[in-house]
Every structure is written in structure tokens, then in C-alpha cells.
Image (spheres, rainbow, N blue to C red):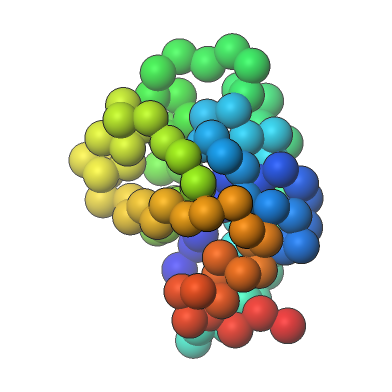
Length: 107
């Protein structure tokens, strides 16, 4: 499973971004057997200027199965749902805590 987390930083110790579309980074986490296997952070180049639907399309092209964010607009939420991408909204906690709340083992 591939998870994209809207993040304020580049590591799992960073906090979840309060807004999906304006997140400075997306941290992509590959999970296998409920354990983190790979983590890759990418700067969100669309944070300042993006058309509605552009960031959800980026998630779909990256084969993301699940998105974690603290806040997300209805338009983005609808785009993700229509593509079969699951969404988990959470408090502004560390990425590690957000993953652990889903039962994923993080070292």
C-alpha cells in the first residue's frame, strides 16, 4: 500500500499539514505487512498556485492508495473518492503518530 501524507516537513517526525493543498511537502510511505518499508518526501510545487483537482491527480498518478491530512477541501476530497483513493483526516500530530494510529509499525 502507498500512503501520501500532507506534511509540514520531510521526515516522519514532522507534523501533518493542516491543509492538504497547501502542504509544503508530501511524504510518500510504502507499507507492506503493516510495516513501513520506504519513505520518500517531495516538495509540493503546487502549494502556492494550483488548479482545483491538480494535487489529487498527482496522487492518482503516483498510485497512492490512501491520503492522510488534517484538513482537505471538498473538491479534493471528491476527486480522491472518485478515483478510489481513501482519505483519513487526523489532528495535527506527527506523521509517525498518524501511521501508528492506523496500526502501522514505524521504527
